[in-house]
Image (cartoon, rainbow, N blue to C red; front, side, top):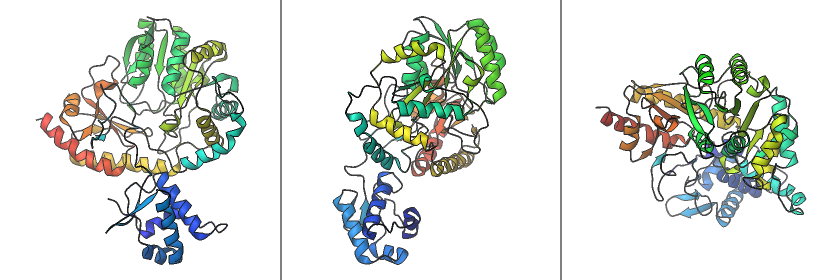
Length: 466
């Protein structure tokens, strides 16, 4: 059980809002910190005496604020422990990103640490964003609520986002979906017939490939090197395979983590046009830079035959369940028909939340970015200490390391572990096998979980590599 010190709490509380009673400000701020995950479920809050000494508030103010927390379900009192922060009803189990591993994360009741998922928790302030959107919801409640192509404010906000990034876009080119996978599936249905081929780099993000294979697409692979997309091999594969579609991940490739420069994007787009192949550009990780904001433009700026898909799940929160398609105008009709064949629109409230976040210029909050950067650097250092023969990369963005192993034992390692769930390299292979010398290790989880996971991984590795 963690403990929040009075000094740490003072830093999280910030400046008091003097427009309301002090107890009310303290209660509402504490509730927000707990709801947003800044204060973790089960953490012991500092005693009333410690808070009085650190904040200079009266004992009555602190007592009343803590009482309000308990009454609202955000805290409880335990004999010998003091006041303990809690999520009303407790955190919900699961919530991780399913990968094609034959399951969907830990079994109910399992205490295993799930490192098959590379996605961050909700950033601070998400609860307040939903409350703001609720105030805007009455304007839409008088309608039937079906917006199959998306709410106009969100479509315009996304169009403005691309225009600012160097890709002039109109709201009529934006189609809102329920996530990047829905976007990939809709795009595939719009431009591919069953049995046609899709080319993808290997490794690649497996769920995108599954979305196209479910439509009957045949797959072909081209290898990606540790330094990124190999244009010579891509050009050769396009000539040999003549695919209808190619999946492209130029922005912090999942799982390799590489970022393609503008020269590479222009060359790739030209090779696709030369081959008569439509590109589906997956920009799910485009905003996940950690060191320096990339000075690149969206790949679709280099060709009018590139379909861009994006998602709020990695840059904002997976619980929003929103994605989008930025379509060339000559494909907009086909895209709209394909999208409407899947469902009748994404939830209105979530669309309002995302529109507000985009208009405010909010993606991955700075505090979250700093936490991810710290986790990445810590994990690399720990791997060098515990497993010096491993060769992890140091991606400038994304949410995971791509580790090269000294022996082809990635799947054996995943099977050996019981306390940690891993996605072996074969999970990301286009062919569904191979890449046994590689392992994806997310660094987006809580540090406490990672501190438990890495020694267990090291112990298991020494057994399977012996």
